[in-house]
Figure 1 (cartoon, rainbow, N blue to C red):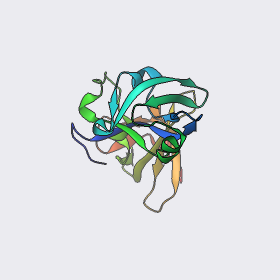
Figure 2: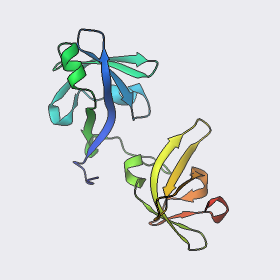
Figure 3: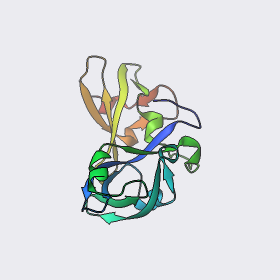
Figure 4: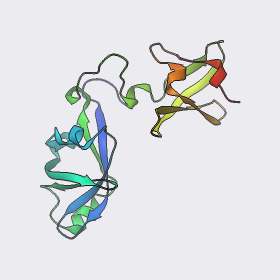
Length: 161
């Protein structure tokens, strides 16, 4: 992924049409619907948000450039991005997922573990999935990782084979 202030950061993806008038269903990557609502244009101005409302699986949105169901279906898979510079400043101990995906990890005993592959929120706290060099993956709770350095340091008690 490209870094820097103008890097495109995905906040949602269009997952399908909703009805026949051009509304689309969204899967959100941001913290809440309010996080998405603060932006009016996406993809370098290619999409203009008219309305957005909550839906059981994410959100329903209407864009000025999508006029009917055919347009909504054609937009399936389109990520809604904003430039990195448009994102709010982070507080202490906060991070954007894009900043740690791919971050190298070692154990607190110095063992090379691999790279952060994904981040999941299962409700009780974030879980980090680490992919080893051989492709095997394992998960650790976010509280077991110090991500203030590069490489990130994982408590060895949480390291899986």
